[in-house]
Image (cartoon, rainbow, N blue to C red):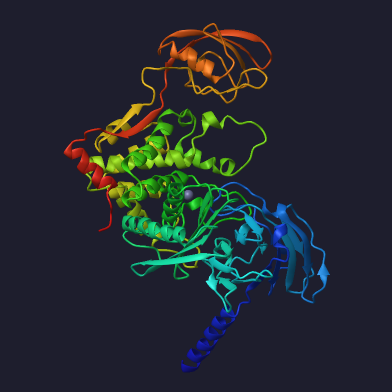
Length: 610
Ligand SMILES: [Zn+2]
């Protein structure tokens, strides 16, 4: 008995040691000519047991839903075997390099070009290296659980610092990741960083700002980000455990930055051109930080684990992105960083889109989510009719969140709200976490999301009805009634004025209709379409948009006027337009809300912290 126990202990110990001793993949990133915007990458993959070793560049990047094919910027690729001899890699597809005869170790050396400051790509120049890992690093099939080390070389003559959610390594310029999922999720800003830090409870938050401005801007950003962080923390009642011991806002506020925000588990990348004002920057801060719960940990099934070889499909981006979109302006208002009028404006834009955009009749919120791989950062060469058939899942989901929040509050006189729903989703699906860092063990399905609503509302029929109508169906909530409870009016933007559609004319080569005509515009019924050349309206020659306005000013909704146009086949045509009222809606605070409306509004939009 005793002997057997000892033997078992020895076997266990040996197993544990060999597991701990697994050799990491080692990356070294250097910048010999930053002014030419490329980075030198060297990677070493030890303990290769596969006969054919499959090196890859990602086709996709977590949080961005379309394909980006990062291999397109990789060049000067050299592969070496264990003995240091260069070996020929075969190319099974445009994204891969297959290596045989490697002797159990593969080293690869390549250059990668990058000149886009945003949340998805790579940007190298004399001012910084802004690195999104899928755009930069080759990885290997079968190495998902292999830890990695990433070492940066300081470019000549610089004294840059690094901000990242990667774990610190043995030197200030060396970092580690426990596995591929975490490595790929960990962007790096390497440059002259203004670092600020604050704590809320036991959690540490860092602002790593790269900008041409002064200390005042960094101080203000840290101060206001803290207000947002506190309000969003109050929604969930707690913060996640940030694995490296802190959460980092990587902010590039630079002349050449594209406007973007990208969420990660323990950090976010926020990029904005210097022209972008504080309000827009804060909106992105509020949106991205909300993601550290919703998406990063409360994770839809289609995104977990992330597959870097393809576009990842989710049916729940109306919740993952849309509900996050709704909470951005709400958190800003609760933090005292936005006034009632601008918050009403933000909610109004969501409501107007979901009420009036024709796409709702074609695709449900679930269908819109499945369009993400085509519409999120993707480019099309051919024309599409998305203008009439797609509503962004950000907007659609944001409007659904508003309807759900107000419906829950309406049913319970503010005792139950969307905050309770998000907290329930957090406790069931987010908080349990993952058995491996960077993973989520309980991603949710749409059924799970509906079940959670049934539990939170205490009304299964309500939950089923809400999902069937507004999420899987094509109905629209009664926003006017719901918003009236909080003292907001939903009103037509141009009441009593004649309208024929949001016609934009291109004056070049005649007056051509510049965009797709929507089915709910009077022009549509008159048979007018994109590229048609408008000659006359109501007997008046049309030269520019201002001529259209002049004609409309003479009429009222319901009037019928003649249109003469030349279609794309150069056929002259005449038709009749029945003018209507512009259906566009605004949400505005009522002039004199009742005490009950004020109380409802305060419960909804008021601060969550003391
Ligand atoms: Zn988002």
